[in-house]
Length: 401
Ligand SMILES: C[S@@+](CC[C@H](N)C(=O)[O-])C[C@H]1O[C@@H](n2cnc3c(N)ncnc32)[C@H](O)[C@@H]1O
Image (cartoon, rainbow, N blue to C red; front, side, top):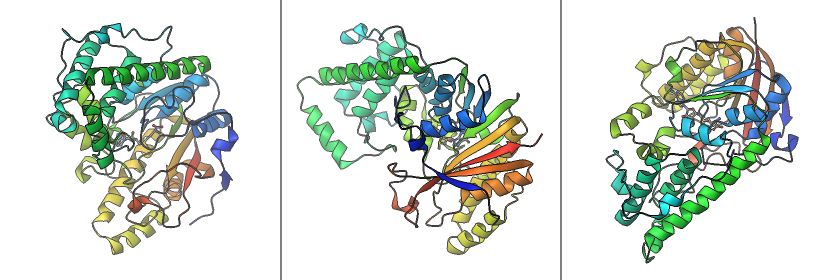
């Protein structure tokens, strides 16, 4: 393993005045979201006003929001379709709070019925009936901020635990729902929560507006980046790819997708493209040039021969993406990645990425190592680092042109 230039940093301490949820960053929950300070640091140090930034694993769109706050442009791509409404709301410049007066009259409200066959398993019928009306009203008069408030409301009154990223039924949530069901007027309960959510979402949006400097932000969901060809050049790529097996994003967003009108088949199709769970056959083969990759391949294979397939699929997918997009980048490539494990074994992702991309013509500039203090990345013991020290790494490479 070569000695790469590494420096320790605390991205939070570089910007002590910024909270991780400032502007519109905290508008809606997203698993393993970038902290905006990482993106800001990269932007300020390596880019200039007017540059184009690409995030091929854009998730909740942190790069898009930071780009507009610093007068850069961003192209934000993700498999998860939620990126589009999320970024539309997070970069919206409101003139006034959304008008929600129509939601106060449910008697003759239109009804929106999700097509997802399992929706009823996630709601008590009393709540589902009210939510279907709220969504019916929404679709007659959509508004980017109201949509986010409806997402929040639809999570809150579902049996899914709203404290965890997964769609997961907890005992605590069941007890909460039972208590809410005892209320005399479930409609009022839901409406109060919805109105409060609209106020909070508007507050975040208005805060974003005070930071907004300019630029363009394009968001595209439904993108299978593993088989995607970018038809233009960009100045920089900054991203945080999936962390090994840490999350199943599409699965986590089933409720939101259902309320957006997705059916079982569409949801399944998206799930099947997710890294690293997708089928080998859907991943264009590449040769991985990394001694560290090979070393960990052997270690994992000895411990768990089945798991090594996931390891291989993960790195073939992610490195293939960087390799193919690499030819479209004129300046810097920055990858932010943590130390998620494959069944207790921690491959050094940053070194594997660096070794391979150096062979592909990139020059390693520096790796920033951030020791995580407060962020709980992985609740699952299986994913916890065996060393107990969690670090995240920002690898910066320069395109050789
Ligand atoms: C660590 S998250 C990115 C979070 C993002 N940096 C943010 O601030 O919200 C990784 C993302 O990779 C996406 N992803 C997984 N497989 C993908 C694929 N085949 N094509 C495109 N995106 C994919 C997931 O949907 C997820 O949003």
